[in-house]
Every structure is written in C-alpha cells, then in structure tokens.
Image (cartoon, rainbow over all chains, first blue to last red; front, top):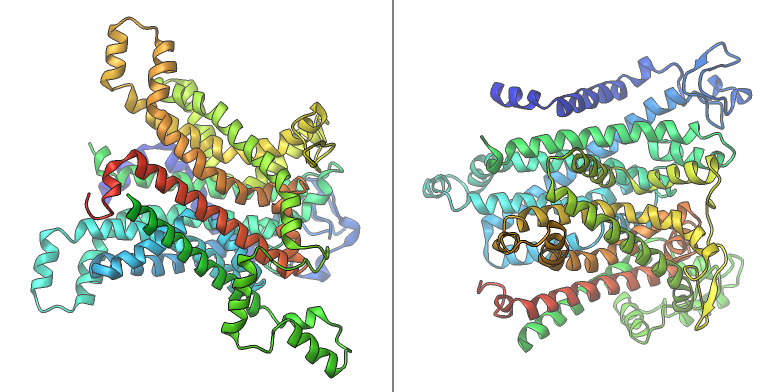
Length: 286
Length: 325
C-alpha cells in the first residue's frame, strides 16, 4: 500500500488531479456550510440582483465573486450545490452499475456454458450502442426525476463493468488457487465472491473511476438537453443550460463558470483513472 | 460461409425484434395513448369507437403483432404535432444530419490521422505531448460544453461565424444541402467541428498506437534500408499498415456520430433528426419517438452486420464459427 502510494505520488500531474478531486468532493459535501448563500431559499434571492457580472456587490451587501444568474442567485453557491447533485448522481449510478455489472460478469465467467454465451452476447450487443442513445430512450420512456435518471445511467454503463469483470474473472478461473478453492467444500458463492472477486478488483477500480466521470458527463448532457433532473434539483448541466440563452447577449459567465467546474471535475477524475490504469498494468511494471 | 451469414442475419433479426418489443412496451408504459388522441369531453360512444379504431381493445400481444405488421410495411404512424407520416418527417430531416455527421467524421479522419501518426512517429517530442493532451480533452470534455465554447468564441465574441440554424441550402434531387455553397459551409463549420471533436480524439489515439507498432515492423526496416525518405515511408507503408483498423472504426463511428448529433444539433439549432427526437420527447410526440428509435436501431444493427460480414470475408478463421479459433 505504501509502495503503491509512493509510486502514485511520483506523477505530479496525477497527484495534483487527486488533490483537485478530493477538494471538489469536500466542497460539494460541505456546500450547505461554506456556500455564501442558500440557492434554494427563495427569500434570500433578490431579482434586482439578477445577471450581475462577477465581482459585483449585491444589494444585500454580499459580494458575488462569480456573478449571479437570471434569478439573482449567487453563482458560486449555485455551483457548489450543483456539484453536490452532479457528484451524487455520478457516484450513485456508478455504484449500482458496478454492483450489477460485476455480478453479471463474474457469474457469466464462473457459470460457463450457455449462460456465459447468452450474457456476454447481450453485453457485447449493448456495448455497440452509444450510451447517450440508450440513456435518451430510457429517459423518454421513464420520464424525469432522480430515479429514472439513475436507471438510465446505470443501463447505459453496467455493460462496461460486466465486460471488465468477465475478462478478469475468466483469466482468474484458470488459476490453481481457484481450482483448489473449488475442491474444498466451500459454497460456490463463497468461491466467487471470496476468492475470485478480490483478484479482479484492480481493473474494476480503474473502470469505476472513469465511469463515474462518464456518468457525471452524461448526466450533465441530459440535464442540458432538458431531459435530466427536474428544475428543483439543479445539477451543473442544468445551470449551464439556464445560462445558455443569455450567452448571446454577452452574459457568458452564467454558463461558463458552472461549465468550468464540470470540466475540472471530469478531467481530474479521468487523470486519476489514467494513473491507476498505468500502475495496475503489469506490462508497464518496472 | 453461408451458415455464418445465415446465423448473423438471424441474430440481427432477433435484435430488431427485441428492440421493437422494448420500444412498444415503452410506448405503452407512458400513459394511455387514447387520452392524447381524442378530447376529454368526447362522448362514451366516440371514445369506444376510437379505441376500436386504433385496435386498443385488443389483447396486448395482438396489438404488438399489429404494430409489427405496420412496421414491416414501413408504416410508423403519423406525428401528433406535424400531422404528417413519421417516415416522411424523419426522412425529410435526414439529409441535414447526414451531411453534418459525414463532414464531422471526415474532419476527424483528415486532421486526426496525420496528427496521430506524428505522435506515434515522435512519441517523446513536445508537439506529440500536445497532440495527446488535445486527445485526452476530446475524450473527457462533454460535447455540449465544447459547442458552447465554440459559439461563445467564434459567434459571440469574434462574430466570424453564425451561432446556429442551418442557413441557405441548395436543392439537388429535391433535397436541400448546405455544403454546396460558401454561405452554407459557414453555417456548417461550427457544428461539424463540434461533432468531430470526439472522432478526432479517437483517430489520434488509434493512428498513434498503430504507427508506434508499425514503425517497429520489418516493412519499415527494409524501406529504410532501401533508402526511402521518412516521409515516403510514413505516407506509403505506415499509412497502409494502419489503415484497416482505422477504416473499421470509421465505419462503426459513423453510426455513433448520428447518435451524438442529438446534442450538437440541439445546441446549434441544426434542423436534423437529432433535434427532431429531442423536440418530440419534450412535446410527447410518441409516434416520432418510436419511429426514430426503430430507424436508429435498424441502422446500428445493419452497420454491425456489415462490419461482421466484411471481417468474415477478410479473416478465414471467423468463418468456421466462434469457438473454432
């Protein structure tokens, strides 16, 4: 563990990315305490403060460092709360997709025979479809809201986990320790989850990091298109969409700052994922 | 070989059947379509007549069979908003999307392949690192955000290019095209660039990986020994070696470009099928949703089938079936 960390810290860019990710998560978690304003508290909003450029001091005496949006909401506070919602959706969807995908993939590799063929055929077919299209179909069918959106994101993503878990587990099942575990009177479930699963974790961790970033990006895209969360749950994508009409008249900050927050988060998570992939890759081992 | 083709065709048919069942179930899951079709204060008799007319009093499997029958005869129903047949509506919007997607894939290949080859040829140079950074950004930054920045930079701040809509088109064979006039191209440049970014990133990665491998091959060693210039080697030998995977991805990606066009078309108000589906979702125009989904599913299944079959033609091992290899 210690060696792993030292190796990680050698890459300055990856280290910086990790710091950014941790700080973003902390800011999102602490949003209700560190945000200058509660964006859901309608009484705190003043319409005469609407669409103020960054750095303006509002009528309430508060400095709007990143400006205000069309409702006079402080943009910095809106972004902090938006980060919270975006991260929540990304992590929730990623976790459920991980659970479903890994179970399917490992069971397919363990069961073999026609089950293996059938499950992997379906998953390969699904991987040929672009995730955004699947998510779009599901949102169209299920309607808007948190749960439909998570279902859509999970459906669009579980196949990647299943493919990775299957690949790793299929490589493991040839090994002697699995044979040995099977020879003992342990239950098949214990062999699968107690012996095979832990050895499949490294590649799964890499996919999980990248997929959380993808889920956040996908959620932002759907929300931007007006098909994501309801207006009561303004994620970063919706903040960007809200500012889009004002962009043409030069008030670009309403869209740009939430977008910058989104990009920093996604790129940082991807950089961490890249570094993990390099470190777990046995071919690049020194 | 014929056995393999039949097996693949059957699979493709099964997938289409599953997709149609899914879409059908989806359409029935969202509310009762009869409420949308007739006014709420219609009499009980009119209501019953309408239900019988649309076959909604039949059991579900009967309705599904009827739906399949109409699908096979190319009848996807009428749009509730535009009141014209869905097939006509989708095909009238198709050319706009097609030319956008084609130009995006072309931009991605024409710019991406040389950049990627350079990055693979000189993997440690500063330029190559820059190219790879562009490719990482292209993969991770969401398309809609790049579109916004393009509009902000080139349309709002610099004022060089229009921010949206399609602009003038030229009629050829009764279909309007944008790429034939300079003005049309001006309108097309930003959306095409936006849509191409992901392809660009992908082409860079593929070309780089391929070139790195090809530079170590005997072909290149012998070509160097023969005294050919480095440019000739890259142009004639390396490009040829890496072209097969590139062409495959080019074909497969064309399908996903059509899907990604949904986002780009919405941002740039480009009147293609992508914008049509978003509009139909927000206005609950179900026949259009169903029609679009069935057509796109059909397109994907066909593209995959073509790629699979051409692989089988090129690779004799695959012809013997999946488990022989």
